[in-house]
Image 1 (cartoon, one colour):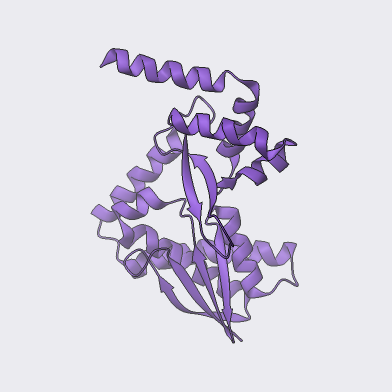
Image 2 (cartoon, rainbow, N blue to C red):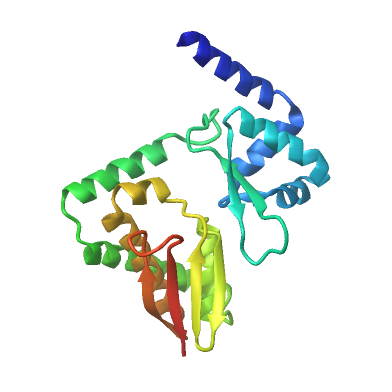
Length: 225
């Protein structure tokens, strides 16, 4: 068992011993959502053909996870890369935050936090985010503002318009692990966050918020006023 663990660690160290791979890993560690080969290449000023084999090498040793993106594309689906759930932090991020989030999630669930109570707590934060967004971009429409907010939080939103209704799907959930454990807490915190944000921005209303219990990916339907 120790030999396997040492071999795995050695492979990781070798993979990150290359300066280009280390730069790519840092870029993905900082990203709020999975990134495509082209996006990583553009950010680092490299050719996509240079980046691609480095991404594959890091995937092979367990550093990266691949997400397939089929949205609105013609031809082959696009791969997007993110740090694997069990990838070592390598000292790049404080380990206390995910541990704290898991503990708070367990405490809220054990205390019997009802979905509506979680939504109320999320709404307060959503209103604060909405007020800050209005101060920065006072002319942004509600759908545009919600999409921008979700993108900043790492949900990689995709929008579909149908007359006066906009459906925003969350194609990547940064809270996936916590939501799977206690959706009654996490999903409804997110619901409240969106509802509070929309109320603060104005110009639309939340018709329906679909959580993990309803569909994959989760989504929100907004009626445009």
